[in-house]
Image 1 (cartoon, one colour):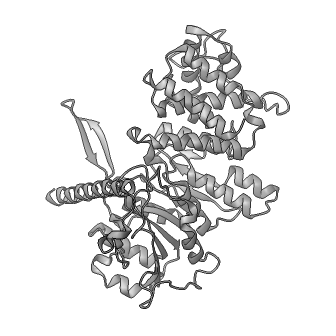
Image 2 (image 1 turned 30 degrees about the vertical axis):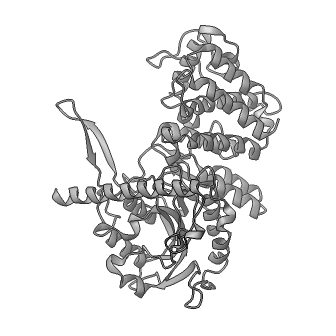
Image 3 (image 1 turned 90 degrees about the vertical axis):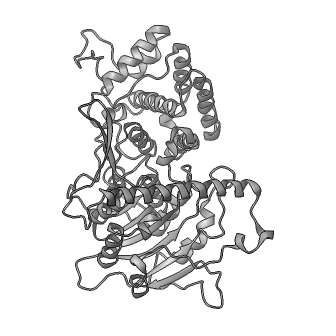
Length: 507
């Protein structure tokens, strides 16, 4: 059976379960639990004989049930009817208390498939395949396919954790991570950057045994505070041959912004979560739910602010080793916002070599109304002179039209950018823009030109919008309608940001 047919077969069951109130995200979550158990069962049998130990069932207080059954796939797949539902719920509760990757996979796990007959259908579907015999590329592709289908369900909000794979691959191809180096993503979602970096290293290097072991167990590190997303990331990584099924988790469940843990990394690849403010909710003495803005009081930050993206940018700067490299997706407000934003930009230009900004179009993310950019920069040692000498901009937004489903962005759309980026020698770049060729998308600005701009703004465009001047070249109606929706969403987001700033100023 091909990977596409397996994805289709597994996903078709989602439509059946949806009638029972099981959403796409909940279904994918159950698939993750069951797939993990099935693979562990396969690894305990010949020719692997891994000897993975699973606990006996525990009661609600966490105590092992006397003469209780083992919480594993073999026992689960032998159950039927009400006994199956009961055992599955007990199994999930038991495994959620375990340590390492096992405990992280099953953290806060619950049975969302209440109909035993349909639960058995899912179990039988997974049981028919020999997952351990599949190549990591096939298993990974199947799970990535499920994650992308889940992201398409915009009502669930799952899209906010899914960065377009074409964009991720382009970012990795530009950075070109090397073996025996560490990579971190402080908001790793379902692990897309890790997988693309893994593939790049494997495909572009002849790895020896030490390098393979380092890549599998020591290269990747990250944070993800959402339990369901974290478990999907861990499963995604394991299916791609990263980590061990009984090893320690690479993914920290804590908020990365709370403190500097002192660890430094060679590369940061990230797309921090959308939304401008960091906030937390709590119940006050009157029993009312109150939301409070979070400002992280960190000595290593240039500015104290509740702006989530500015905080992530400052945190990423801290995480980098000297000469470490970062490629980070950030929204437009980071490029032009005044106050803390202006000071963060000035400090970034001084303390790092911010050498490239890729301007992205709307319509490439499942979350609508997002105007984003990729910032590429290298960390540098202390210096009295600014490290940034010039910034190269690639405008892939003006006159570009994409939608996530009908006209998604593919890696070949960014092929020109990858070539012009010139990873092998950043000092040997040539502009495609000139006074004679005003349609060129690749243009540089000097440090002096940038700091002379109002608020040191990096929000720079120079291409003419053809839709304003050439009515014969308007995009297809579907794309135009989608872009109008995107622009309305973006306008609403900007309005909300302005109102938030006004609220802060009033306080």
